[in-house]
Image (cartoon, rainbow, N blue to C red; front, side, top):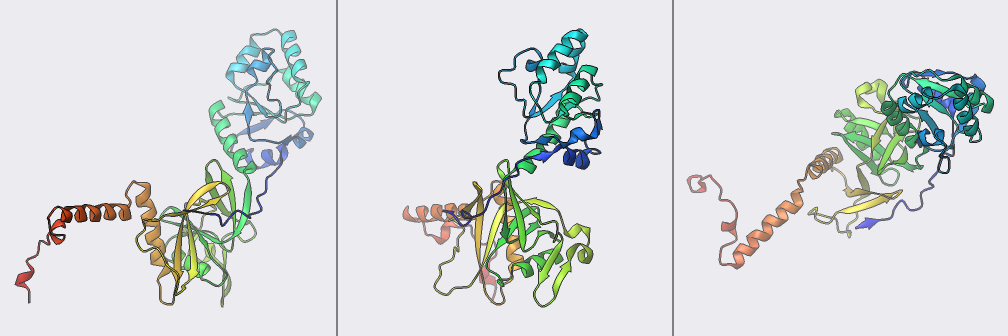
Length: 343
């Protein structure tokens, strides 16, 4: 059964990323070197795609993705090296009609003077990286996909339990933060409390904390606590994929709750389906242990073992055997102990 509890979320999109911000954040990790003036860094990247302009250099510009980052690898560079200087000038003169946000040379290749002149003329940044083409493309694609991914915020708590990202939902004062705090005390890792930022990256929902309240929790009766300082760096993490939704709901006498696990419920967040578990909250119920069981059960399902379905199939086989003349109690494995010897 698919629920629609997140249909009214206010989903937002980032429209552009300045090359200056990209340069500041990833100059070191991507091993970047700037070959144009710093004023050129004001250019804007408007989508996550990267383009290799080999065909455009050969003269075919009908489908030239000029609005993407242009990446020159060893293949394009070798082609340019094989040309006379005048021919290279003509190529870049033609390409100057298309204003690309950024030109990148991989393999630490040295830019031709004609390419530098074109970028300076357009006030477009030209950088080089020591990374291989595939490595730079993979890293940059991931960075930009996460940056341009649609995102929203929800009132919830997110914790990593045995490697499973569990997003706790429920009305205020139901005990979400207290449950998460108990999980952290038992060695699990806090991602976000109270406000969780969710982004749709690929076919996954990625959760993280707001930078202003990262690693902090609000506990009624105590106030704000710093989880990282109190429990150590191992008790927190910055980001986690959401894999299970856990809704905490006050116990309702006339409500029917799932007791077999055969009827699974999923919810959709920005088009991604995620399993949902409803936990009725009542005095004395150990939500922490239940949460750990949910995480372990999720891991078992990921490995192909569905306990509820396996038990149901075993029970159906036993009933079928009974209908063929065999007693139901004989259909199960006999107890190896001889109970007659016990008083």
